[in-house]
Amino acid sequence: MDVKATAKTVRFTPRKVRLVLDTIRGKSVNEALAILKFEPNQAATAVYKVVKSAAANATNNNQLDADSLYVKECYANEGVVLKRFMPRAKGNASPIMKRTSHITVVVSDER
Image 1 (tube, rainbow, N blue to C red):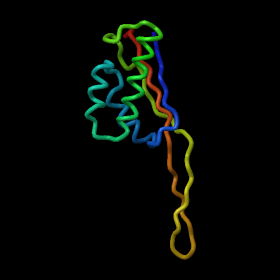
Image 2 (cartoon, rainbow, N blue to C red):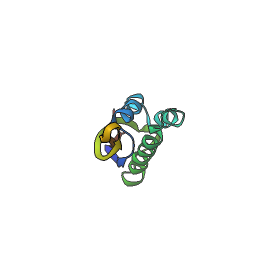
Image 3 (tube, rainbow, N blue to C red):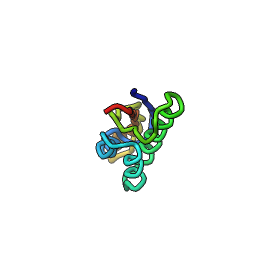
Image 4 (cartoon, rainbow, N blue to C red):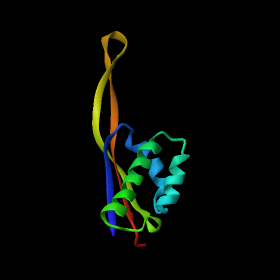
């Protein structure tokens, strides 16, 4: 059975989050949490929370065994973009795009 958890509008760019998600895709939940705990990338903290939440949803809501869970799929879509402007030379302004992510993790007990 597939169980999903989502974190919306996380202040990391989707490109950087996808680097972290590629390291845990297909791994067991326990192994993925161990990898994320020691990952130097800052986006790993947000992904860690989503994986932990998906595992908790599976055990509490669907009565699945926590040890048999694995990360079936995980992806980061683009969220809202905060648009800011930075003053430049000669009275110009250049845009600063502060991107956000929607992180989704699906865990399952069936391979």
